[in-house]
Image (cartoon, rainbow, N blue to C red; front, top):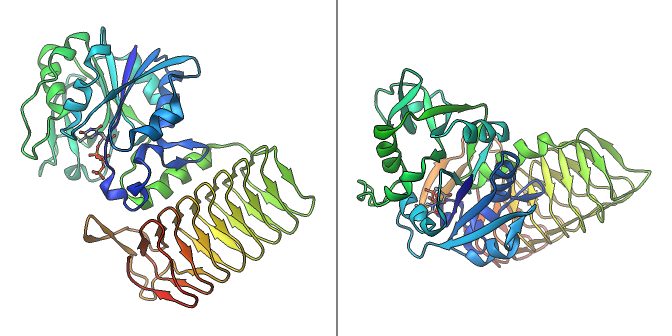
Amino acid sequence: MKAVVLAAGEGTRMRPLTATVPKPMLPVADRPLVAHTVDAAIDAGVDEFVLVVGYESEAVVEYFGDSRRGVPINYATQTERAGTAHAVSTAREFLDGPFAVLNGDNLYDAAAIDRLLDSGPAIGAIEVANPSNYGVLETAGGSVESIVEKPAKPPTNLANAGAYVFPAEAAGWLEVPESERGEHEITDVLAKTVDEHDVTPVVMDRWMDVGRPWELLEANEWRLGEQERRLEGEVSDDAKITGDVVVEEGATVESGVVIEGPATIRSGASVGPNAYVRGATLIDEGASVGHAVEVKNSVLMAGATVGHLSYVGDSVLGRNVNFGAGTTVANLRHDDESVEFTVKGKRVSTGRRKFGVVLADGVKTGINTSLYPGVKLSPNTTTNPGEVVERDR
Ligand code: TTP
């Protein structure tokens, strides 16, 4: 079966991380977010992909090229962000049979993708405690009857998990009218499918929509937690490594380092001497964590450098971020309230008691910079020595 993977979104809620990188290419454990979807689909038997790209498409094309693990990859370009049905319609020339549609920014339970592909026409669903915040499946006799958006009285607790298998004819049903929010939505294509076919709800054990920066941390926690201990890099005999830690070949862990899993130290990265890395943490390719640095539950993207005497907690550091000595992240409010973060101009609660900072690619801090919880800094921002950064820049 062919799979269309939607990777054309702008990821506005994920800014400033998506100022330079499309959201599906943000790192989750040892690969970009969208590669988890592609790999799960390959394991489930997908034999050809169409990746729908748009915003910052070159990064996606450069990463995947024309195949992955021997499975061909085609690209369709969506020039305007006109909705998910519109996105799939850009891939129509490649569709010649039943096809799957998956979101490139969702993290799926891989076994469920396998079941979904075996059950088509089908839709992935996840049981949620608060269905009113989601598109909710109405079911009868084991089939889906409809999807109701954010219903006040939810018919079930099954939320739409953005994974579908459509019958071949659905390629002719992609021209749907604009919805109330002005987009051409894949759920309207599903509505037509439900009229013509039995559509099976496939309940997933786990699913995540990775939309906002703290969800990138949660996505990493999930995937890092699934990795088994593997020490293939150069690890000093004086380092103490406990739990499920991956040190990839080409990574270095020097003396006096303590790493508590789950954590992944990717190829070309270095840790130590005398550093403390606590789970769940990803230290991506070529990143470095030096002497007397503590890192906890964070993502350090490729080339990020935290050289000495610093603390990084519950934070995302973009590519090539550089911390001056003594830079400290605050990740807890004195009033113990959840940390807030600005998403698309609005302050929202992260729902987390502990959350640090989100620094875009190329940010450089001066020595002894202090960063308040929930602060975000745009690409290449610099701070002066001794600055206390309370607000976003
Ligand atoms: P969203 O999460 O709604 O959009 P987004 O990824 O751009 O993020 P944000 O809302 O923060 O700006 O999109 C759901 C999925 O569909 C996601 O994988 C992106 C994809 N998509 C497209 O490929 N084309 C589109 O026109 C739209 C609306 C979404």
